[in-house]
Length: 348
Image (tube, one colour):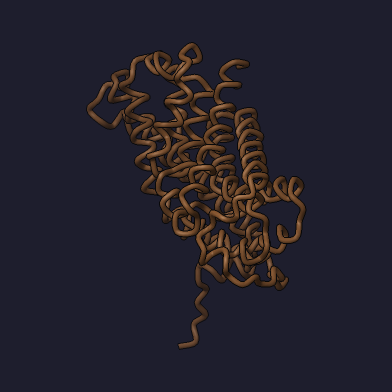
């Protein structure tokens, strides 16, 4: 039988511009139905919309598809962009750079590269082998999970460009300064011996041309890998946010996460470290905390500590770092996050 079969992937590859336009139209149409759809779902249930349960359900029914739509869109686009930033190319861009400028470049590259804390060990090894300075490596490893495209897009979608831009500046500042301080401390001796003794390798990379259709396929693959991995965290985060939204009394959070409470920022950082989630999972919680009276600086400190200082990441890094270097890394980053939270609580 000679029937021509067109697969799902062949159409974007054959007509990439048409596919992108139609996908954008379909995405916008779905996004614009979220509020009426969530209200309709609550109305179908035997609950009072004005009750605590009704408010929590509406929050969950609205935020779940909203976050997933935003996440799918940004991961797809960045999956195309990330075809320009392989680990090899990233190492090559950072190798041989002087400190200071290299810290800025490393932190900036962290925004557009698809690496998270689970990639910390192989990335760290590759950077060391390529001759990237230790402090520059830490600037990248702080920025990549904390100031990534997912966090910025979800913050923009939920809070607007001012909060997203604020978080971008704060995150980059913490990554650049923390990396620079660690570099100045000259702590290479506290790498695990097997890492320090590895032979240096070339940081060269091969430039390969890709068509727009192939980059679209890369976007599909990124959605499959990233969204497929983080959606459980999203559901948990939104469920917790819904409970806070529906059941926590107004201004309750202000009693221990407000501006007037001096210990609110340290408490937020301490609370955030044991948690294991990512930006997609923690932002719905951030949204609910702010709505209940928590201060912006305190909430940003909580969010940064969850993403940049999680206990699982420290355990992963223990494979390549000695305890003194891990403690220094955590202390420097925590200090930067504390400063950020306190300053913004004071001025906003």
